[in-house]
Length: 321
Image (cartoon, rainbow, N blue to C red; front, side):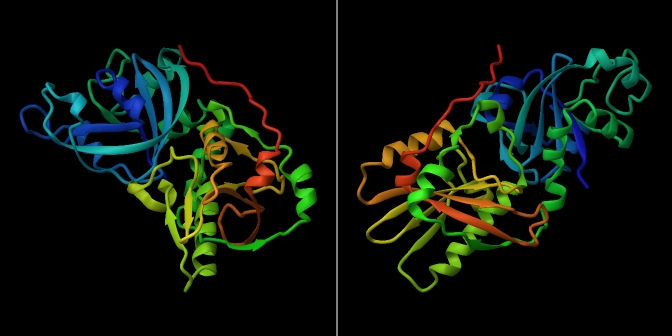
């Protein structure tokens, strides 16, 4: 079960929001223990974190990995903090919830979070108790809370098997891919472990299919490559042999709808490869996947020619001033 934390990022909010992370030293300025820094050492993958700046919850995150040792970022040079520290990488969702609106309840259930005046104590990271977990959960849109907590059911899930669905190639271009569109910045943040299961299933499928061949299957995303992964490339997997490099992005849903979202970055990678003879872009569309990953899911491969003729529509954009 996920633990819930609240982080007060007044001094460090600009850097930490930009890089979607938490960082703290392990010890205070006198090289002694600090409750907030000790709490950092307990953060695990899948834990929920509320980010507070200036008494406002500006974001909620899910921890992408367990906390790990990390030196002080170069941007903090000149600060009084020790170099030896803790780091937590976050999948962050922007919010705007003033804590003052909830001071009455919080003051009655303050735990270690609030002082006698109903304001946050001078501490970096707080662990929320069970009552506070329930209350803070209800401050979020229901769909967002569900997407954050879905990792509880998928983190230890079995990777599903895949069964390829092949359709008439002349129809695929017009009917199946016609409804693809560019994902908005807001929705692009709404990722969950269903996508991770899809990527793992495709990687497993490719590994089995090309065992003993001259193909190399290279994991790119953090879902597949862990801390060494990169989620900003516009693709999840590279499939390479001596003649051709295939850039593969995986799109996964629990439903059967064949439409899917693409980010602007993914679309730009697709466009950049159109005239490359030794490079191509494919989307592996996985659907009907179980949230627990125990079933067989269907998938189709949308190749570059089909994707080129798709209809791309820009949706709304999330703007923060």
